[in-house]
Image 1 (cartoon, rainbow, N blue to C red):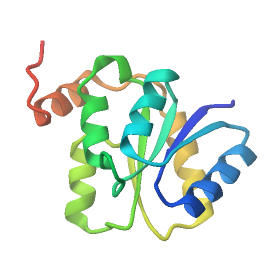
Image 2 (cartoon, rainbow, N blue to C red; image 1 turned 30 degrees about the horizontal axis):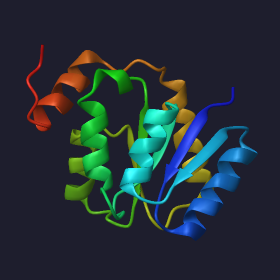
Image 3 (spheres, helix red, strand yellow; image 1 turned 180 degrees about the horizontal axis):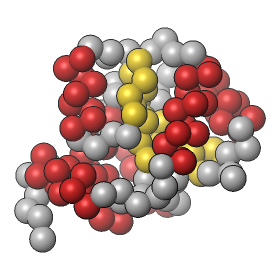
Image 4 (cartoon, rainbow, N blue to C red; image 1 turned 120 degrees about the horizontal axis):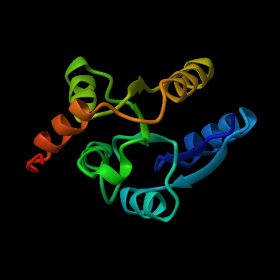
Length: 143
């Protein structure tokens, strides 16, 4: 099944490689080179999966993840963080903010493909408890 994939990464070579890889898997792909472009792309057409770099200009991946998880309109979006920051503490922060997966750069092509397949197979609805945790982390009151 073709999914809509947004690649948000400021490294053009990584973005091109991921775009090729995801298109080869049959997905519809869009790209964003910074945080502002990523948020605008998400508002314009909701993706099924976001491959999200942490270190981007105009909004880092943590902040984008936090914003998305705090807003119920984006509950079904899967977020895979791709980053050179592969430390355990960095991974924990990403997962606590609501990322569905965390892949450290450099990554293997097979790893990214398997990860996207896995997060898509998990279904589209996120558990309410995960949404509430993300809202709390963002300092937003839960209903």
